[in-house]
Length: 227
Image (cartoon, rainbow, N blue to C red; front, top):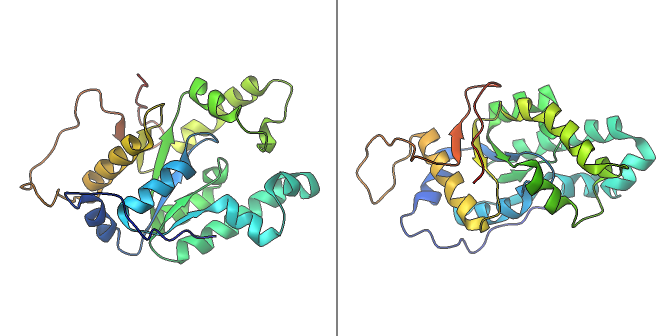
C-alpha cells in the first residue's frame, strides 16, 4: 500500500522539494540487496521530498493475497519474479513517487529498461558484513533459508552487483543514521538532474573527497568504499 508523505521532514534550503519537482513524472527507484535499507531509507526520502512512498514487495503481497515466502513456497521463484515485474511496471505508471524494490527486481532486463525510461534508479550499495548484520534480524527472506546464509549472500552479491551498477546513481549504505543516507541521495539527485541548491548561486560542484556517492556510467562503474 502506498504511504503518502503528509509531513515532509525539515529541508531548510528546499533542495529535496526542488529535486522532486525536477523529476517531473518520473519515479525515484531504490535498488539493491536485501538488507540495504531500501524501505527504511525510502520512507524518509519520500517524506523529505514530499512524495508518496511505496514498497514493491508489499504491493506484490497485496496483489497475490499471500506473503512473499508463501508465494515462493507455493509457486516458485519464476512465478514470483513475473508478478514482481508486472507490479513494478504498474507502480512506474502511477507517477512520481519513491519506490523500494526487492533485491532481485533489477535483475530483470525488462524491468531495468522500464525504470530507465520512467524513473531514476539509485543503488544502495552495502558491504556483505553490513548486510549480514541486518538480514540476521529477520527470518522472512526466502533466498536466505539455506544451510550457509553467508555463502548464499556472497553468491548473490557476485551475481547482482555488476547489474546493480547499471543504476543511474550509487549511494553507499552503511551503519549511519538514515538521514545521512537521505542527504546523500538528495545531493546525488540534484547533481544528476542539474538542480542547484535554492539558496546558493549556481556553480559546478566537484564530488568531495571520501564521498559515498557516485554516478554510474554502466556496469563497470567503480563502487565507493565503506569507512
